Length: 330
Image (cartoon, rainbow, N blue to C red):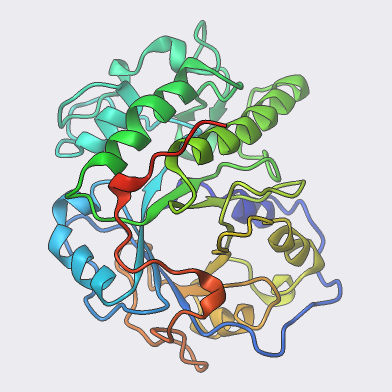
């Protein structure tokens, strides 16, 4: 499952009141958002034009032909990544995930072990367990601007994934990354939280320079100011009066990149997905069954969210060739 959505964390922490006026579009969206994180079962082959699908970080290697087929049918497929904290496993049982090894340790191999992560990549190298994400026993990585950790991702991981012609995806989800909500962090001072927020903004500018204009990026958090480097944000598991709340409508509007926009929502109730689909600024509304592991069939919900095509304004690229990603540094 997702580590911790910044936007979801607001609801979990009870940090915001709801019930303010709701802003809605008359037309809304009819396009689906799908999470499929299982690594033993491929995504459904029914996904097509207008669907935005996120697979786990090893999905492209395990299911390349399935992903190619749904991209050929004009779905967009993104890889899940988690730049803000590590995973606690250190017993060698999490094998077969070479992408995690490369992402968190910079090494090649299939067995992820926390002890292989360079200590200097953590927020507090002297005491990595001081600044943590308690919900997932994760240690916060060094999110300061221009840190060795962030530069590793920019130099070694994201280009490595994009340069492989067999990869076949359209971009990345950047889980938790965003300065809108930092309540998932424990042990950091306010000055450190401010520094994290500055580093996240730096990273969004830097990763856009690295991956180029056509690579799709979206955050599972939101931004306090306009952000022209992300293609969208994700609002996770907000229901009832939170659907269309002014807070979220304003957050959706702060995605100001003009190449394309991919603001998404996800909920465990299909009818809620349809309500979110009416909200101004939402491009894809999602629904999950039981967990994020297996994506639902489309269409779903009483409004028929599914393969309903791409409007011209979406600037969808059929079978984008990720090997063409390189940008001229700004």
